[in-house]
Length: 166
Image (cartoon, rainbow, N blue to C red; front, side, top):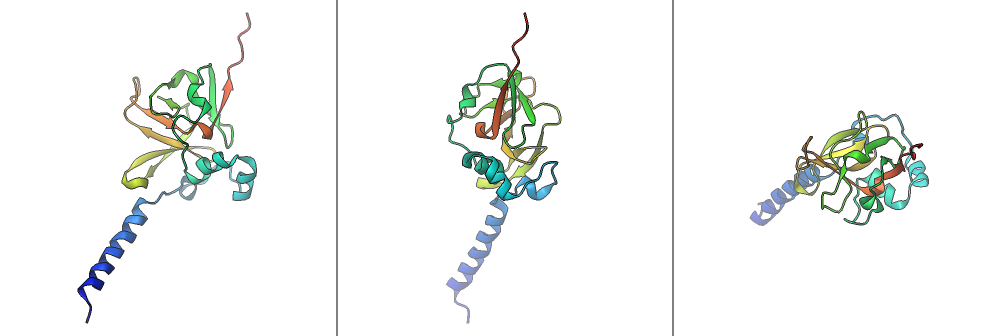
């Protein structure tokens, strides 16, 4: 005879397993093919440990820890994994979140996937060329798009604009 506690524990375990499967991240790399594909060892050799954790494992940095948060020069923010230009400095703004934020990516620069980690549904942003995780996009940004691309600064590199000739 099945004890009621065993039955309840089994049902709870099944629900827990189902919740874990729903909540776990689904990396962009599993969903699509990218122009630049490297082995795990190649990515580890190219990237710093922090860049690797963010770009390849969908990690995040501590708020306020990226030097790019205070980058205000004219230029382009590119993927730290493949150097694809992603955002213009013209679209960067101070969101107060502790991460570099932009209201629009460059054309054909990023892709998005559904991210169900931490018990919520968010839109994950990745580099369209190498699939590196960049951050998330939210609909609480400024005009004209109303979007906030909240990016991990360590997933980006900054290229200053060339000084203009006078």
